[in-house]
Every structure is written in C-alpha cells, then in structure tokens.
Length: 114
Length: 112
Image (cartoon, rainbow over the protein chains, first blue to last red):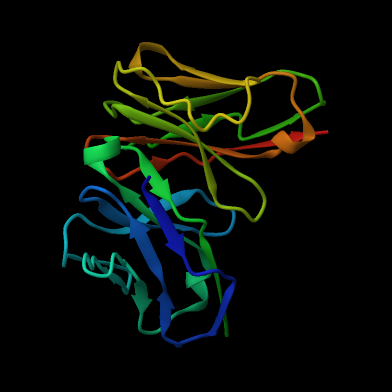
C-alpha cells in the first residue's frame, strides 16, 4: 500500500542554518504531495503542496520539489528562524487508489535555537 | 471564514466511562477524517467518511471505537469503556475534492 517515510528527528539547528527534511513515498498511482506543519500547542496546517511531477511547492520560505524519479519530496529552507520550531509532516493523497484519503509520515520535530 | 471546529477542547474522564467527541467540518467539504495523536507521536488514522459512501473504518483500534457522520456534515467519535491508553489528542479534518486537509484544533482526552 501507499506509504510515506520521513527522516527521524528531532532536528536541532541554529538560527539562519539551512534546513532539509527528507521525505520519500511509495504509491501505486500519481499522488499529490504535501507538507503540513504543527506549531507548539496548535493544530496541523498545510504548509505547501505539489500535485504533479517536477512541481515545486513553496510557502513562508520553505520549498519542496516533487521528484517522481526518486519518489521524494524533501522540504528545504535556506535560513531557519526560531519561529520555525514545529513538527513537520510529509503526506500524500493518491486519488487513483484511495480517493481523498491522505497518508501521513510520522513527523519530524524541528527545534531552532537562537 | 469558519474553519473546522471540535468540541470539547479538553475532556477528562474516568477509566471505563464512555466519551463522545464532536467535529463540525467546513461547510461543503465532502470528506471528513478522524486521527489520533499520542504525546510525541505522529498521526494515527482512525476513520474516513467520503460523501455517502461507506466509511473506511480500517484505522479504528478496537470495537470500543465508533464514529458516525449525520447528514453528511457533523461527525461524532464515540469511545466506549475508555482505557488509559486512549489518552491522546483526537484530530478531525475535512477536505473538499482538492486534497488539502483542513484540521480542527483537536480534543485532548485524558483518561484517569
């Protein structure tokens, strides 16, 4: 079945460091890919998405490119801030096999220190 | 506009009691999901409603868990004879046909 794998955390970075959180997926169809973020004490919210191969999603300085050849959707940011401290979830939605059902990765906790 | 709302925001109950958690999705969203998030853990899928189709209950951990969605809108998650391991944040999300999930703030359940 479809699945999402993320790099294990927690990840701790200094402010202004470069961030990469790896995400790879397994899907039988042509999924849409997402990154969700959960700030401390808050619910999940969509950070960015990409719906087809080679699309790049971007928001708040974060980017991720849908790479079909490597089945990856790695999250990157050039210069993290303390306010980026949160848990990041990679997810997919494979409409060919599961309609709108969304499958989440386990989440990666990020802590940014001043 | 109004987002997904959940009630109560916090629920403390005694072991063995039944609890009901409510989710009001965004109007017009056809799909509704329930997830469970234990402390420091990822999201555990519980159940999925899509329009008038039979729900996908494959994630419910035991027969003590059930959910319904009335009139294609409000959903109630019921946990019978609660156990301490049921303590978690229960999240509801709804989606239109465009994949993006909109999450509610969650209900924090504590079973003493």
